[in-house]
Amino acid sequence: MSTADTAPRAILTGAGSARGIGIATAEHLVRQGWVVGLTDVLEDGLAANAERLAAAGAKQVATAVGDIRSEEDVNRAIGSLLAELGGVEALVNVAGISRPTRLLDTALEEWENIFAVNSRGTFLATKAVLPAMLERGYGRIVNVSSVSGIRGGGILGGTHYSASKAAVLGFTRAVAREFASRGVTCNAVAPGLVDTDLATPYMTDERRAGVIATIPVGRLGVPDDVAAVIAFLCTPESGYVTGEVVDINGGSHID
Image (cartoon, rainbow, N blue to C red; front, side, top):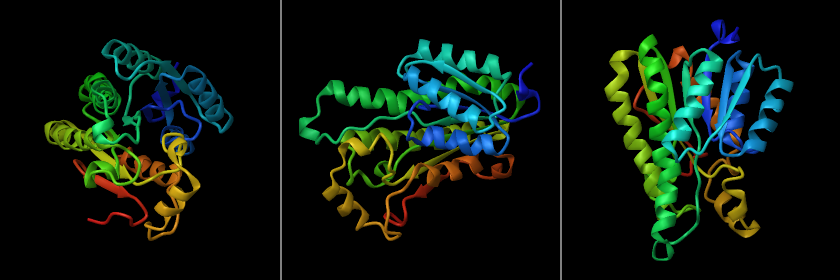
């Protein structure tokens, strides 16, 4: 029998990286007694993170490999996780990619791939999870956007990244309005530059120092900075918060 009968359950996309917001959020939730379902295209990464969570005392960790760009894959992976966990209280849409490509150098294929992961994937996972939440009359959805989606880039991601993350914000607000009366909240977090596998490959030491110089708290973000906020938005205590975007950027962007 699933331990989800007594523990809250969360599904996290993009949870296959060893240094990412997905695994950091899963760790926060596990420490608070949640059971978790992880999905990603990285099969080895999922297995390693499941072992990591089990070693940290997770009551239950389910995994499902799938390409977030594919409706068939998403429905299969989410369906598998729902069946294994016995339901879901929270969905955290973390899956995302970035490229530091300038607009005039951006091929249509790259533009569409960024949107397929960052925007379409968020839509597909949300659509796959919503029926289970609506049937119960309760759910928490948290989408990972970016400061680039608010201010239009300026750090690493190209125009396609900024546009795709801005789309996530519009999607978040629309979902919040549509489903709040049915017990489902939807919020987003907008991190600044966070030291993860998504950003590190594009960072020279000089660029890193230059970015840190623009951050009032004097450092880059780390995954735990974002995970702690997401974990709160997954709880019943966040029930009067919906359609909101939480900036997590060390003061580099204040609106």
